[in-house]
Length: 326
Image 1: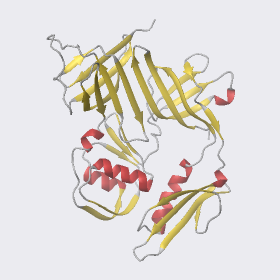
Image 2 (image 1 turned 45 degrees about the vertical axis):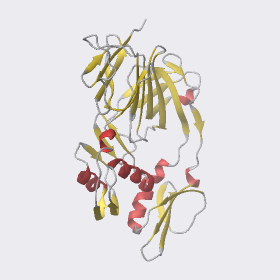
Image 3 (image 1 turned 60 degrees about the vertical axis):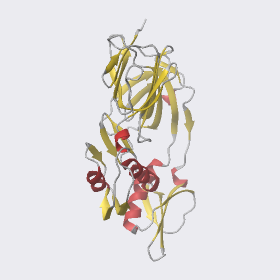
Image 4 (image 1 turned 60 degrees about the horizontal axis):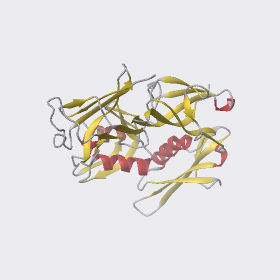
């Protein structure tokens, strides 16, 4: 029988017992979060109650596994303490630090994503570059900058293993591949459903109002298997991006990068499996299903919800797109 094993470090405290842990991690959200539930009577190595010894901003490391394995599943900082019985410790990853400082009076013309991040973030970053055009911010946190990039430019940003990634939808060549079998290691797959999108009817629509009041309006879609960008509505399912003051070339760049993310045919959703093998977003799940064979294939992982406690150690893995053999 598998035996649960954990090691939780919060500030100077370290303990190997926890009531429960819940971790949420995804490339669609800048902030990965964790909630640690501890018995209110838990004591440190000197037999002192831990109440009052945990503070907001304390560094947190969560290691989980089946004995004797331990793998780091979360690193970050205490963001909130709920001193009830049991005690709940809410945590956030490195984005917690981004909320603590303010960017003042930053303004540049024709700035790139790489330049924007390097000017305002000192940590390690991997960036898929893009031209943003004129960019002005004042008295906002870097978290709000990343929210603006997501809302206006459809640029995703997230942390993984302490490194900031921005622009990429996932990490090509960086993730690992793990095997899962519906008849052996998948506990529940009822949330995996088949969807059918017609790429010919999916349109990325961009609008940019110019300083003189004129408007650039472009439509990006697939034509004979190739991405094209034109003026004039071709008809279809519109997905609109509105960014003021951008050139036609800049809008074309954003729309043509965005379009492939708007359609998909195949299985999407989530499945539940055991806590190991370890899966992170950006990894590949190689799924085998002997009953519904069309579900068999390799899928990119979008998000992972990790639960650990009295009910066992589980991962709910949300899939994004199925990989092809091209």
